[in-house]
Image 1 (tube, rainbow, N blue to C red):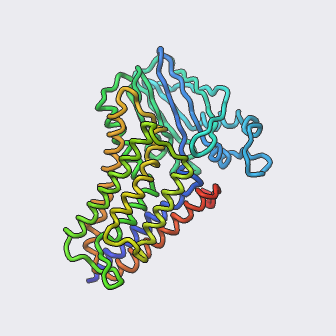
Image 2: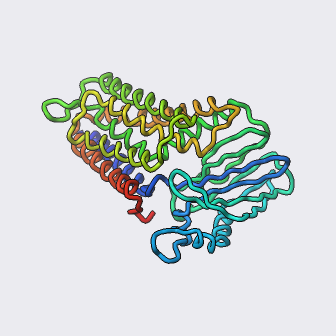
Image 3: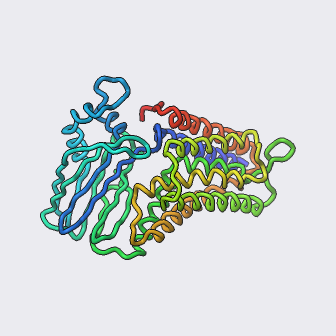
Length: 383
């Protein structure tokens, strides 16, 4: 039917669009982040802002001699320019009054994904504010996927948030925060992380694409009932959830630690393998095993973000559970949107040939770029 072909094309376009938008953040290690910590203590606001040298090099140029290595002397010669560039892209308002931001002597610090410059911040809002509004636009004109991970501490309690120029200024109350409010903060960040974590989304999508099909007689054929597809998806999502929950908890609690470069490379490889398996299935009826195995690796990726957000010591388990639940809710939202549409289109050749085969090939291509960048430590794309 004509309407069904139209919907099928729309489905294929949606997959292609997702793959296309997943390509821009294909950076050498992981999507561009900065880490902003703000503390209210003794009526005084202070802060620390960690910004990746590789991002600053792209924005204002740090590698003066062009040899591909950024040295301390090159960073030091740009301290004033770095401070001015960063301060112009952070706006703070305490109780609706503009705050002044002073940048102190800069240092360098090694994060799991590279070297960052550390900007100590002296913040003057006139008086200790009861609320703080944060406007964040760092690299907004260069990398639309960049985000700032905020750790806000006041009255001995910690809160976490993701700062995004597209979302506009965010306002935070600096009074005491209940544990359930902290839980809600981390739950929200978990949802947001899975929605902007393109490598995680593409891995999940690679597993979902053939869920409405079965490999019979050396080709993909539509399943007979929605129940069959539903239970396949349930096994896959449950396995992925259990696996990454295990390693997320172990890594976030400091029990197990793996190098970021190894984790991010393995995540990219998992996307490649899952996508190529749709083209020539080596694992067919037990794809939940693949989901579990690679889910263990993805858990370390989730943990790296959670570690940078900071776990509040007074509500550590609650924050950890909140973030994990948020990740699951984000996943379920994707599944709820995808599965009914895919099931309705499963009998069309367009779905099997274009959406499944073409989409899987595109996903493998994008993930292959990520893998090369992360293994060999270079940036192929200019954004």
